[in-house]
Image 1 (tube, rainbow, N blue to C red):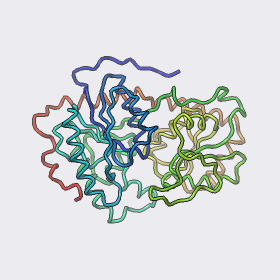
Image 2 (tube, rainbow, N blue to C red; image 1 turned 60 degrees about the horizontal axis):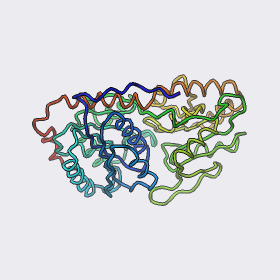
Image 3 (tube, one colour; image 1 turned 90 degrees about the vertical axis):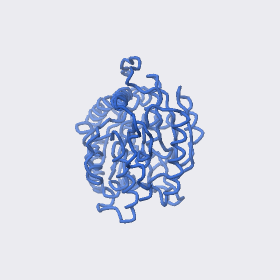
Image 4 (spheres, rainbow, N blue to C red; image 1 turned 45 degrees about the vertical axis):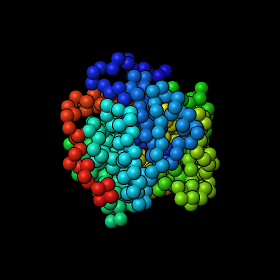
Length: 393
């Protein structure tokens, strides 16, 4: 049963229209549509400005099906890509022109750089991840000096934001380590709809589900799905993965020992989760993990990388393994396979915890943040001082 929170009419402090940015590459797209759908049900219209790769036909169809959502695409490099400075400037002009045409009440950025534009509106920045914290987690060392222009742009954007939100305290802590204290910040958990992600009937009957699944970009060292590929031959159950093994530049190779579904639409992904008993993601870096939440809602037991963010969310409802300890990963997966009662208990705990991270709770928290920002008088552009900071500095 999906819990539905009451939806009161919008008060004077709530926005009527929000300009939101996104990209169509990873989890930010799913997050943006989940949030936009919830906001739409509350009467908020969304102008969704997508940069980077153009949304696929399936992505576009899902977006335009949300009442009150206007989808716009700009073919600009994203801020973490190579030599993005010219594209970031052009994207900034495009976003300001879009704001002038659509007249939003506030701006919700799922990135950093463009918070430093002279919006003259309240600006919220949501910190989903960042290159410096990714690099530190994956390589156990600071990012090379070549990432300094990126770091400067991120720092300028964070400083310009009227509020910063992150999906976990661990991500907020990472921002403080790499960019300094964030006095105007808070945590809002991401959410998924329990009505969309659910397991098959007979969920907890011993032997009713077999198999191990993982979801994510196979080429991404942060997801560490290659670790599963390494241990799969020693396991009794088959191991499958949904996600692309091909890097954006076309390089990469498929896993040797995993059944690879490739990139699949949500309905097919829901079936893949629903047929598996265990979801394994020995990640080295994961600021939240929407795939973990989807799998937990689907009734999978969780075996996760031992990270502060994942412990923050799933302590007591998951098994944790050091990301690069293949022996520990093998041992825990074999233990769950061989102990059906323990597997069932863990899957129930994960599903119960997952219901804490619902869409409506996420939407309500964001509406509170929006209302607080709109209570601030906007008599002059808020970012006049930082607007002069070159985006490529």
